[in-house]
Image: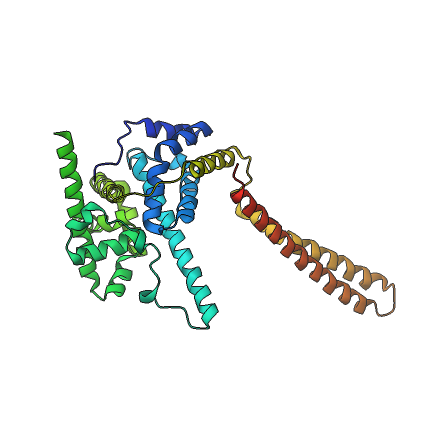
Length: 191
Length: 164
């Protein structure tokens, strides 16, 4: 399952070029091609249908507005879109969490919860990616915090109480394992 | 720091860069290094593809209802064609003029009032009247700005909810 990023053979890049020239039909075609996977990624982070739909719209809107900055050599179109989607979803998740905390604190008159007690709104909706099961528990914990919550190195270190260097090593080794799996499965697919 | 050491250090940061989990200073380092290093650019691309492939491998991915998908598509196309007004990118000067236009108008009127009273003294206690008018003008201006902000918020909200 880890070889699904579509290789659009350049047609996606052509759509982006048309979008940069102001062709609205190209935006529609791009949406038809990728909205499903953008929604799935947003939902995986947020676990909320309405919020994920908002992220889909904002992702394609950002793609429309920044089409001129897209570089085909830098990333495939699907990768570019999903990186935007993940970023927008993480922003939305942080914003929602802040609002939930504020509302809860206002309702109960208590101080806002600390980072370690923040509700994880998306946890019940996550389906662990196949590759993550191949990681050690420590690697998996670090990469899930980075992957689904968008925490930085130092934030992860604070959250799990591990040295910063250890966190960097765990993330690096985890992504290398995942990368190896992607390459292996792609090789298997081609055979 | 030699170029090779810096290159090795940046390369070690690329997995986290693909995940967007670099601290701000690290992200600046990576962004400064990438334009001149094809190898790191390629590696970052591969790591980003790995991140995306991991997303794509989530079991039972959620699917969007066809009606909602069509509604979002339609709204996007209308936004792109300008049919649905969206906040436009405006220049800093333009934004500042818009933001402070109400205050500028109020200040101008107050200035005219004070100058008028300074030269003509048309009524007894003219300065007191001018002061009261000044407060009234500021109050009206604040009220108008609050109302304008509310109208903008309602308009933006309506545009977002306006699905066909």
